[in-house]
Image (cartoon, rainbow, N blue to C red; front, side, top):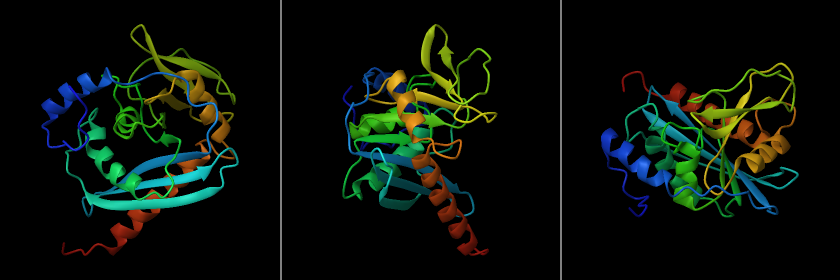
Length: 231
């Protein structure tokens, strides 16, 4: 089935079937060795207003100097269903991406790549729609198992889903909770880990994603504060 990124009018059951088909189109390969722009994508949700705030930031590589910051606000058009968040979050991010004057060569996503029960998390789905290399870097685990390991900076363990490695559990700072890295589209585990590691600065979260999350959170707070208590 060819990918149609403009057809989002699906039931949860239909979305699950589409995920299974789209997962077969994900290409696992090393990230480009040379590139100039890295992007970061994040989503915040305002329950008060039932609005999604989709944010994308871009940075020069490798110094991570800010280039652009764009966002859109839209109503959530798909219900909140665990495992199907990409059907809720990818459409507004596609619209946000179109606002960028200079598109990223690689896009970091605050979510899962192939570390997903059907191998099509948010980062993988978005990369497929954009035909752009994407890397999932999540703050929590959706699925899979890993062996215990020391929480020392740079240490990692394979994230396994059955007999398949779908990502890495990676410690970015001594003594902090690990990150869950997985390839999206047009990336693989070793190059995804290398990218995330090079993006980590003073904090646990890679700097592009940290700044995208700060912006999305600030916009959500401002929206919620400005919402009328009478609807």
